[in-house]
Length: 102
Image (cartoon, rainbow, N blue to C red; front, side):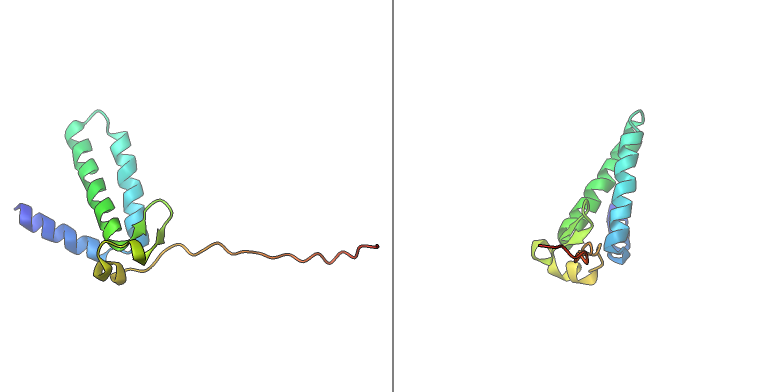
């Protein structure tokens, strides 16, 4: 039934980490592009892509950058379940050890 499918999908998404959701998004997005000739299959992948985007919005998770912003989460309870994300890049401050005559 449709309700059982939705429940199963909701459970599966709730078990998926943010970075796992991003990997699934990337694969599904690519699948939509690859199956141009098979409309029914393309429709299923496109539907899955929309579900993934909605779940990411609930979490405040940006699927492109891999970063989460809790203030943008549509559902703070779901957002709090998964807080994994790509770390900020390290900033390296270099000091020149070369002595300069003045």
